[in-house]
Length: 83
Image 1: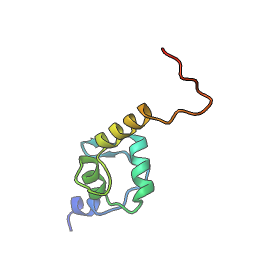
Image 2 (image 1 turned 180 degrees about the vertical axis):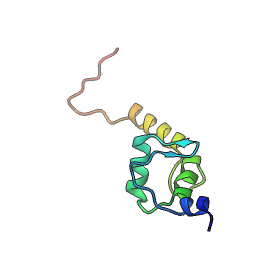
Image 3 (image 1 turned 60 degrees about the vertical axis):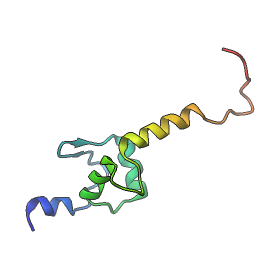
């Protein structure tokens, strides 16, 4: 097994954010680790790039979070007033 193959098959610690040319956002990396803590470097990069049907790419994940914040449920204590 080559050094590259060996590194790609290892499970990196959750604080590792840089994988060669790819830099993961800290929140995205944390969410991915919480859902799939045993992912190898290869699986993390593939997920980041959007090749994983079970977890979104970093861009899709951020877009989904942005949409959720735009359409958050209003609490009863908030008044509906025109802006």
